[in-house]
Amino acid sequence: MDVKVVKDIKSKVLGIFLPEGRDKLPEGIPSKLKKRINELKRLESFKGKESQVVKLQTLEGGVDVVYLVGLGKRSAVNEDTYRRAGANLIKRLKKDKVSSADVLLTEDRRVKELSKVLTEGLILGNYSFEKYKTSKDNGEGKFEVKRVNLVGGDKKEVEKGKILAEAQLYARGLVNEPGNVINPITLAEEAKKLAEEYGLECKIYDEKEIQDMGMLALWNVGKGSATPPRFIHITYKPKGKAKDRIAIVGKGLTFDSGGLNIKTGNFMRTMKMDKSGACAVLGIMRAIAQLKPKVEVHGIIGAAENMPSGSAYRPDDIIRAKNGKTIEVDNTDAEGRITLADALSYASELKPSRIIDMATLTGACMVALGEYTAGLFTNDEKFAKELKSIAGRTGERVWELPMDDERLRKHIKNTFADVLNTGGRYGGAITAAMFLQEFVGEGIKWIHLDIAGPAWSKEDYAYYSKGGTGFGVRTCVEYILSI
Ligand code: BES
Ligand code: MG
Ligand code: ZN
Image 1 (cartoon, rainbow, N blue to C red):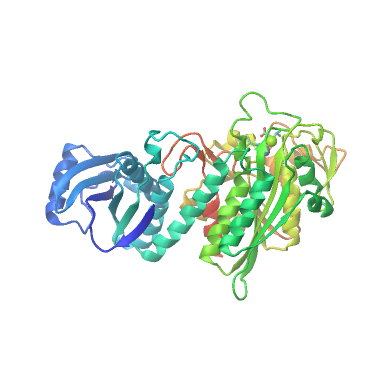
Image 2: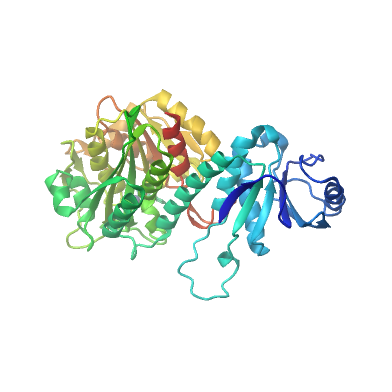
């Protein structure tokens, strides 16, 4: 779908956003049409409630149909409200098989912000994972809206919104690919392809190089699989002098069966999504290559498949990570943190000022915060404050959990090695973060986002559709742009 900016209303279909209790229609509607909308609006009892979309047969001034889209309570309207409303509109257009429409920007003074967030909502809302469905009559999902025109929008902001939304969809699409399509090798090939297409540097290390470089933590997690692990390093360098250097690290378990501590019951289902952090990293690098900030950005992924087999790593094994620290394996299902031990050590050697890692790391984080909010952990409160403020605007919910509980930290220190890979049932998201902290280099500002919950959506909701969400892409890109 394409989003364009136009000066005046031209299409036969028009979308208008309105909050609860607002009767005044936005500027720019011809008076006869305005009158007609006001009449029909009352008849259809449009209240402006969030996610309410009402279709009016206007047949006036060249506009046949108007969709009124609710924004909910006026006091609660923010950027994400518009993103969600844009998605609600596009979903309705899809359902009604409307292939193009105009959309009116409601508030003149916020044209820039609204142009961007509406573009994001429209593009994100238009996605669903359908590529493996073969039957032609298989529903609405397949109908695509071709074009939406933002009447009086800001071109530059629309372009930015497109890049961000498409990067998020790219990440989403990769997360949705199953383990028989995306494995560590094909994920690395995908990274290479992306880098070539967008003019980024990309280095892939195979299983031999991984061992030679001392990344035995990643190697051990991956060695039980028929598909060996890969290490992916993509670099974006700006033209001229960079203001800063940042590394984005993603957990890349293309499938997590649990390994020898095999997952029971239904817990293995959806574990193709355990590569969500890695897919977000690729999405971020794609957007960064297009938006070209004056910051050097390193995208780092340890890709592996966690499988049980005769060659799999075991509980009790003691493994040395790249930074020299030893890890005792308590549970092979706490594998993500082990792969990240090497990825964070590698990232630290690049001497970035900051590292953000994203990982579908713990079920415990979902127990603590629910499935729609990522856990945020940090060694630098100022850094966290900046990221939280940006996440507040991207609509990607994050909530900070503490790292200063030294008694809890002892749980991962009760080991024959330097650190144990689990810390018991309570505070599981925190002990996982504390484990990661062992592998972050001295003096580097670091944020860990546990995205186990929000990386996956069980149902369609606003701009999310069932499956991978691409969570983290927009927040990280906006953060890098803000440096
Ligand atoms: N990939 C899982 C975490 C996860 C769970 C992500 C549910 C998304 C949804 C991770 O590798 C894992 O298995 N963690 C264990 C850790 C435990 C063994 C200490 C968990 O959370 O149960
Ligand atoms: Mg696991
Ligand atoms: Zn996992």
